[in-house]
Length: 143
Image 1 (cartoon, rainbow, N blue to C red):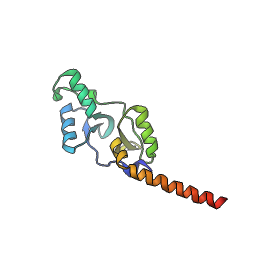
Image 2: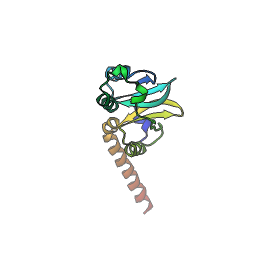
Image 3: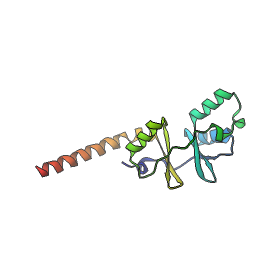
Image 4: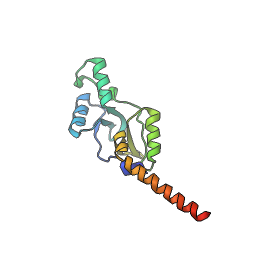
């Protein structure tokens, strides 16, 4: 299964020059756990709920006093729409992340999260069963 099949295409972004306040407001309004930090529409970083908690706990400063570009996680780790979900999971595991922006060239086209992967677990099982059945049929025909 490819990333493009399960990625979310509706993205929440925030300009790198903003404070943390609008980023948090956008996360809350969209009911998501991250915003992609951009400059001139180019993805630069990601700011997650965890980033917000760490920054506010460490500084004790109000959200409007914290520059988004300093709070966000970077460099931005990405995948492509044509990558397999297995590869995306490996990328997430290797980098210790739960949210993986999807880019096509330089264009930000989606995001895939651990929640997306869990939600599609049944699809993965069905695809594996189908592939097993095809392999069994092929092997039966070559005996």
